Amino acid sequence: MALETLSPDWEFDRVDDGSQKIHAEVQLKNYGKFLEAYTSQLKRIENALDDSVGDVWDFNLDPIALNVLNKVITVYAALCCEIKKLKYEAETKFYNGLLFYGEGAVDSSKVEGDGQIQMGRFISFLQELSCFVTRCYEVVMNVVHQLAVLYTSNKTAPKVIETSGVHFQAMYEHLGELLTVLLTLDEIINNHAILKDHWTMYKRLLKSVHHNPSKFGVQEDKLKPFEKLLLKLESQLLDGTIFQACIEQQFDCLNGGVSVSKNSTFAEEFAHSIRTIFANVEAKLGEPSEIDQRDKYVGICALFVLHFQIFRTVDKKFYKSLLDICKKVPAITLTANIIWLADKFLLQKVPVAAKLLDKKSAHAAKAHRESFLQQKAQSLTKEMQSYYVFVSSWMMKMESILSKEQHMDKFAEVLTNRCNIFIQGFLYAYSLSNIIKTTMNLHMSMQKPMTKTSVKALCRLVELLKAIEHTFYRRSMIIADSVTHIVQHLQHQALNAISVAKKRVISDKKYSEQRLDVLSALVLAENTLNGPSTKQRRLIISLALSVGTQMKTFKDEELLPLQVVMKKLALISELRER
Image 1: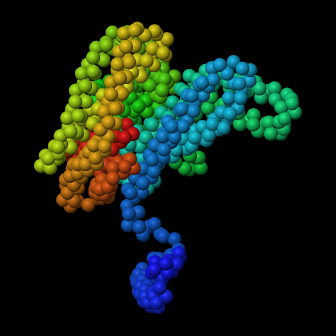
Image 2: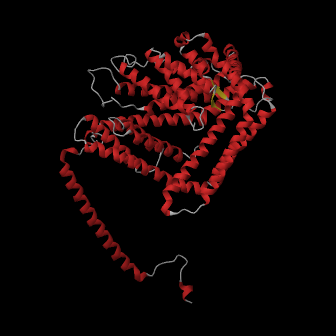
Image 3: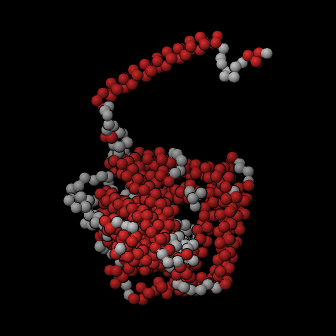
């Protein structure tokens, strides 16, 4: 019977109303006391700070901002991050948009006017691409200016930081990546016959519209601005000068701004950085331990051309070294089926140096490409058999090490083994990918037919590549768990190495601005390592160590292991992306 007296609205008993009200008043009083205490506390802080509190925070009072080095690294890191974003946008949006233009419309393209309709729909995409390219030019300009200000030969200008022995190699690598993006866009458009044909047809259509606007329902006053837009798009994007226009920018600021072309200190630093990056890349190119060295080589060539364009000097010996790489790597795949020939690029973009070479050297690369294809046709089956054994062995190791129970007393050893095996998988995957792409694209580029044996061998190599991918995917849960521990283990190793160097700097009582910069850089790297291994954090660590490794802070036997650890950290942290 009691249940029947309950109302459907679940009303509370009226006897409780008074108790609830008293409780609410008590809580309100307590909250009031808290606010009064907090207000008085804030007032005391304000009085203590006195005039230093204002409407706008004065960055000069920021203890971190007092360190100029942190400002420099912040600016450089921000520029590198933007370059990465631009590169990502190009790879995910603009490359595919251009490559797939006209695909799937083979039959319909025979219909009169279909090409013009496709191009009409594509204009908005080209407009977006134009804005993207303009932004890339601005970023290249900004990077060059930021580096020129830091490495200035003007003795009267104030020094930002002491730069003797400091080489921001990461900045040049990122600049090379952005120039590679522009170069790739040029190559895609130059190799796209359908795009160019449709553009020509669209321009002819526009002429017809211009002669009789009323027939097409177009206002004549709106036609001229549209024609100007098309001319701008053609000259900027479709004439194959995206990269050239970037390097031909006016880098010297007028009205007494940043001086670039006459800055001898910057010219030396630029050349030194290119040579250093090349020395690291050359050693790995064509080797089993190669990962992203081919991409970096393209960037180095682009940087070399930019250096020549700004400073108008050519290192003939280094130019020849760049061309000699064609013997190891006859062609490089930029994206999809777009290949890039270093010898052709360098001879075209640096004609002064090309004149210094004899004709035999100039034509040697082309002959080498033909001999490379002939040798590859003979050796491809043997390579496939070798990789079949390597990949099968690697897959067994993966199954074995991921199935074992983890013993806490040997946990560090297990993590090291897993890290090495994961990286070995990367190396096999990159090697297979390079063989497949280079062989297929060279055959297509040189119009050389493939033998039946070569096709079978390439198909088996593709199978092996998919087997590596499937192994990572199938054990992804255990790998994901391992990656977290491996990253922490690698960070611990890096922190130990930096800690030893930091103690060495602190123990030296000689004070100097340069020593303070080194210590600040090591502290920054240490603090950044204490956290998740994101791209941004690893970038800041790389920039900080560019300063922190000067003045023999690290011994030779300490620096190389630290660089290896940081490389492993980057590979493992980007496991999913790769």
